[in-house]
Length: 388
Ligand code: FES
Ligand SMILES: [Fe+2]
Image 1 (spheres, helix red, strand yellow):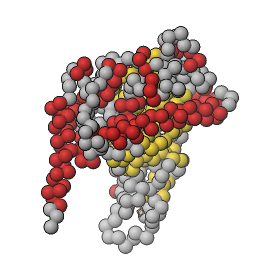
Image 2: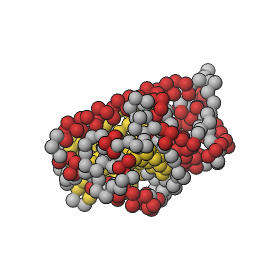
Image 3: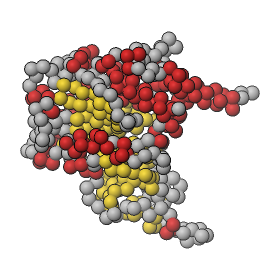
Image 4: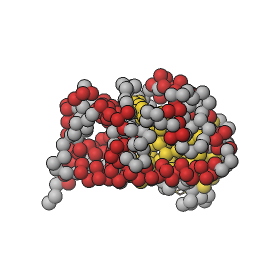
């Protein structure tokens, strides 16, 4: 007979063994850096470990305040198997579970504005604060106290207009950790920007591949040779030291390039941008997977929604100034921006899908990293610190 418990032990051991090899082998010196072991990108048991030790223990970006400007506005998001609801009431913004207290159906999908949200299974209804306000035909359920029924609230924090959540009661406040970069968020007017549009797509590969590829420009000359490389040659990109919760990759415009190559959409640059700011696009990662693109006329903020070791959903918000959004023809501009992002994203999706295939080879080993990929090493160091 199959010994199921032994089999489970083996699977758990695999994730633990990968974690131990990362702790033992990950280089502490950038010049010696290698990738994580390829198994860390497809082991389901290692993914479960990441979920418990990283995703559930740190701050995760879920949205921007401009998505819910009015009282009654809400949006839903599913992150690491938790269906969540973010609402704005008279008291402010809050995040809660949207799993019905009755028999677990998520009470709402998508976004909208409502006073009351009604579960589609048996019509239990909740107000925008998550309080149960209606439960039809429950009068024979003994000791059922409707008033004490409240959707579980999730710890959340708003930093420069960005809404983050955590499932940890212990992790330090995010604003404290991000204090050194708050002036940068202010410079780019994060809290006043408006959501122009969301962009969602499926990534048939591990979440770390998506983060790493977003955060290095080394691949421009191969993967984006006809789209990005001319204006933003990968060899000109540079990466400094990482902070206690983030890292940056800087992408300067090519020498003698024109700022129209940065301001491609015809949007108004943000107030206060310097000559140098107009000639660069910076990429920022807030660990573990909040990805920010800082352009002088727009920013994008993404959260990854890892479903399992091999499947990740990418949820990106593109934010612009109110003035840009009010420009004539903005709908066409947004469409054009979406199309050009989609073309670049398609190039990344294709290469990461191939990378995923190769990483499953029995012969695949950790690879050496160059200076243009220091952010890949930064992410590995962050992961290592969480696995200890
Ligand atoms: S599961 Fe929501 S009302 Fe029954
Ligand atoms: Fe790319």
